[in-house]
Image (cartoon, rainbow, N blue to C red; front, top):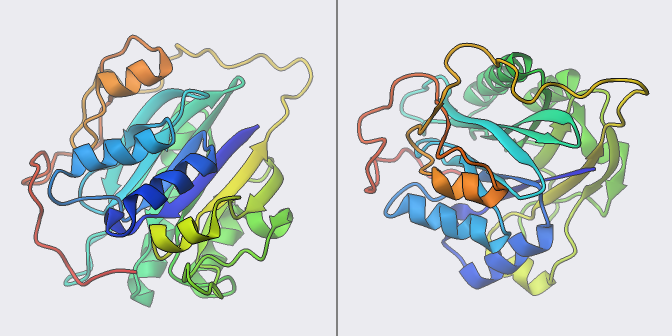
Length: 296
């Protein structure tokens, strides 16, 4: 069983010790983060966030503020961050994707944070699914998409995602499902979507101190327990099979994982497979970038 979580951490601007306790309580194999730190000392702060849950940074560039963190219970095969279509003057959005292997299954997990603007949100929902499926197909993996959708079920972008991937919460709900705001939640705007074929064991909130959940950030996390039994007689995929061109292990800008990611899994590789596209100006720097309008 794979335990995947999604959490908007509001750039770690709130009670960091409380945030750390919530992240630890998630017990996630894979954690999709939105509003990950992206300004001063962003790499160090992302590593600190990951360490709270015994995780390592696996994917995600600075711009876009999304990341995927992975734990020792999975093997990291690939990580990348991709910028989504620009809608000036809106904040630049991105998707972070990590491909992991657990129990002989490969899973491509994407983290997104959609815009408050409806047009941008709808376009980015479509683009995120397409990019995630491209990576999943390249690695023979099952796609899972998680994040802050910034709208509720039944609205256009949510429907678009749910028509292509299964909204996990309605399948096997745990709790009321509300994720926003953390103080007095009454909206479900954060979700985990999985490809058809996964067995959703449960999906909902986390068993953490309510005071910590309120203090940590303005969203509540979502956790999905997914299972995908292997058909009888099926042979596990070759873990060293060629995943396609451009996947030689190199460090890609925006994650700064390197030995940290390999060591967390006992792997010898010093880095991750490369990120598609050229780095944007300032991508490798520690200082912040000019930002767009504040996002929720």
